[in-house]
Length: 269
Image (tube, rainbow, N blue to C red; front, side):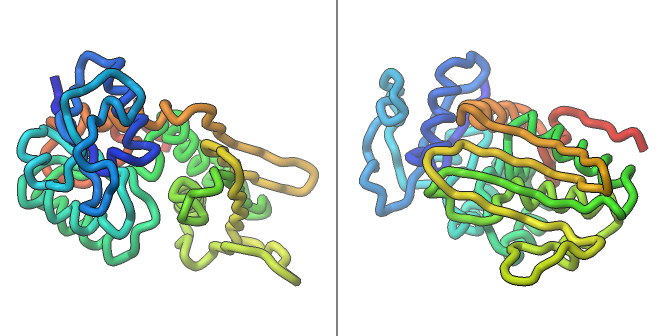
């Protein structure tokens, strides 16, 4: 039984992970962490998630939560990622980071932290999206540069970062497939006169309603198109993927990992 601490337990994903864990017999959520200003402090995490009482209450004491866990899952806020990294590094506990939208400075802190702890960075914990990213990389590598690449994504109205972390991961995969640096070819928005130049990777964003998550990568050539996509119909797929990642990561040595390591995807190259 793997003991899991959920950082950001009161959010959409935190509650979904509690519900998913309630249906599994290989994990146990032993701690739920929220910010010191959360109105949910002291409440039972199971009741917050809409399942039976867990006997575990929401706390803001991350160090104590980590002390009683084997691995942590972070779905809190990008502004807290650096502090959460420091905490797991101090306690030598593995961390699954599902939070997106953190800065390049935090990316460097991740690279620094993995010298001491196992960290899995997952902009999307869906196994289907994990496969999609690899397919996009291979498609970009196989198709000639005459095929234009455009990435579209849609999420619920409250999602903060745009483009989504998953869209950016898809963009990086496409750029890597073509031997490009995404930061040099990405077009994050189009207004006015903005034709697609060869080599561009364009992004389009939709925010509205309760859309769980939709991503499409279009390779548009002259007279033909290849479209690869994924649609999430239920947030539970991310929760189950996060738990799978946590169980897998709990036994790993220090280093940086990704969802592709879990599924064991091997390219044809």
